[in-house]
Length: 109
Length: 114
Image 1 (tube, rainbow over the protein chains, first blue to last red):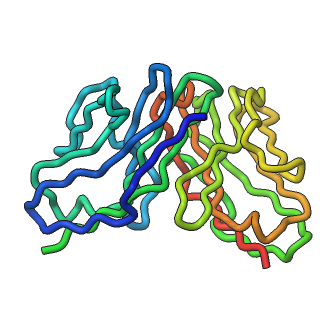
Image 2: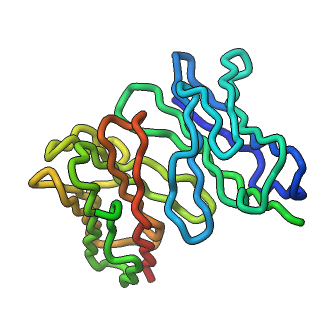
């Protein structure tokens, strides 16, 4: 069965420091990976997806099939990046996303 | 419309009561999804509708859970004889396509069973 692992519940970084939120998945086929974000008192929303290969709000993520990872990175953290981040996997079987347990990113001054 | 709307925002039910949670998706969105999010966990898939057809209900945890979308728009998630383990945030999302399209989530309904 497919699974998404986000090993860190909380990641605390200083403003201006690099950020890496880890995501590993288990699936033997060709997956699609996503990052969803929930800012304080807002609803869950899509941040980026690997097939778009784009940078959103300075964040990028590269799918590494060899390591089955899809880590989210940003070179310089900003206070407004503080939020809950969820990695999600789509396998094409049954129309659902499988989410990880989430990582709370806390950016401090 | 502003986005996906869910009601009520909060619901407290005594164990054994039935509850109904409503989701009003973005107009024109064909797909509608229900997810359950327990405290400290990520959202877990419950069920999926394409228009009025319930194409996947594999995530519903028991036969106490029932969902419908009779006219292909508003959806209702019903939980019969609620149990304490049903306490969670229930999220509704809609999209133009399948789950690999951008999902637009509602604010959720926080259900507490006492």
